[in-house]
Image 1 (cartoon, helix red, strand yellow):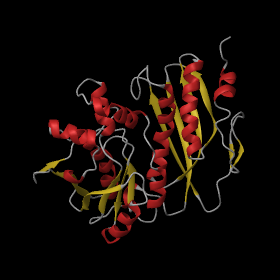
Image 2 (tube, one colour; image 1 turned 180 degrees about the vertical axis):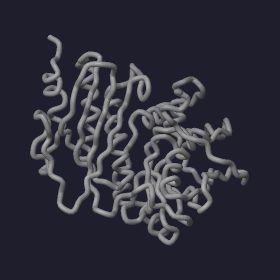
Image 3 (cartoon, one colour; image 1 turned 30 degrees about the horizontal axis):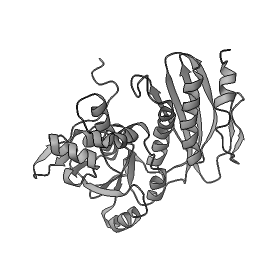
Image 4 (cartoon, helix red, strand yellow; image 1 turned 90 degrees about the vertical axis):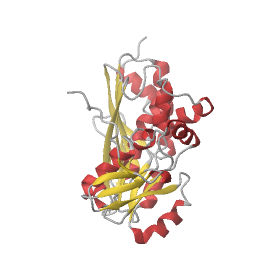
Length: 323
């Protein structure tokens, strides 16, 4: 017998709600009832993943479930927020039990890792798309905003850059990297939201953003909001062995500069707090690497390894060329 909407929720999603004292009423009613802790602000973000745009029709549902939550947790991390609750709107062409079980597994495992409760949502019929809204807490005045960068601040990133972009090039047949396939696929399909790093950078970083659309594009948002420019040093970009080999083979820096889906953090830090930032970096599993400096002159410039200077290229835009 085919699953009904309510059977689907009961079977796969009602249990994805670890006990939290701030959830008075979760999945199963018209609204969730939630209690924001005293002296905390509520940080809210929402993202949609669409089949054929963000993942292919034959994508592993466990990875799709993981990524649909990870991209939202990454937004919370970018502001230094502590994740708390999520809602899920799931549009399905049909209730495929095997797909739903895999999706719930990937979603639920990452939710459990971060103590996140699924507190509500919606299911409907249509082309496969997944919308997640995430909620977190941040101390008033301590959120990492895009508008806080100032000339003289240092630019840092977590992790390594360009892995997801290179994975996509490999999948599309533009490059081969057989010895790095597992690593690259993991980086594209199951990004790690840098929640702990974001929390620890509160009070130290002056601005922050997560790298969903590419370093040049996302850092560009910080520069626009802050009324500044920046210069990056490509020789300082943290690269995995796979991306370093690609750059060596092709001379192409675009995966690390303009490709999306890395979900690392990019933050700016006042120069007089450099020592604190680099001491703190030793506590991050993902590391923290200096890559450039914020400047008064507008624009984003890149110092190439040979010392020449070039303007940075843009990142991913869903609507570029659509008109």
